[in-house]
Image 1 (cartoon, rainbow, N blue to C red):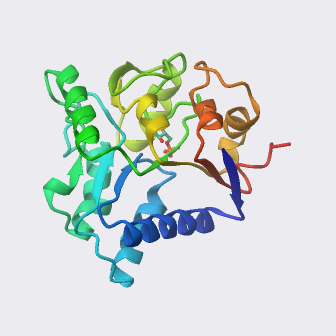
Image 2: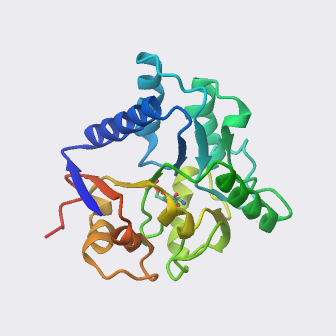
Image 3: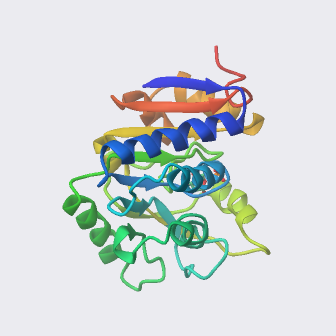
Length: 241
Ligand code: GLP
């Protein structure tokens, strides 16, 4: 695992977006998997801007959504689907065959997980994964205590995730479960970037990088990834030794 720190959120986001754009230029059929949320928000905006400005051919790349709140339809403005639809798919006018997200309204979520695992397999694996870190150290909805060996799965959300997650919605919403890509996929991904910014993430970044590798603190798995990068701003790095 490598650690990269930038002065601020803008620089962190520009670096990540540049990396993805260059990767698409050298491998047009790149498979990108991303988390939604506050952290990768500017990366998404810059990715769209740079792909257009640089006239990159993004007609062959594939986008995979990392996770979704169970029960939420894509039309809900707090859903991960809505985030990517408005920030990436529509601005880039991607064809529906170019992206794959969990249908969290399905009444067969096990099948939804199998569909995702199969899609990843058919694509030959994920090239780049961009993830964030939750206030309890989760990645996607791989909550504390989740096995490092899981494929896609449904998770019971812990209390921190349920309360922090309220920030994505206009009013209080009942959040109970999440559907997510698991760590078996993360470990098989060629390159993984964990992004974190802001003072509020300093504690969890420290635990992820300097703490023990344990399923009790999911983001610590980054220490085991051969091509894993933790990318932060100065504030999120402020507690590191
Ligand atoms: C959410 C999502 C994660 C996300 C994380 C951090 O609950 N399940 O995929 O990366 O928490 O979110 P944020 O970037 O908004 O801090």
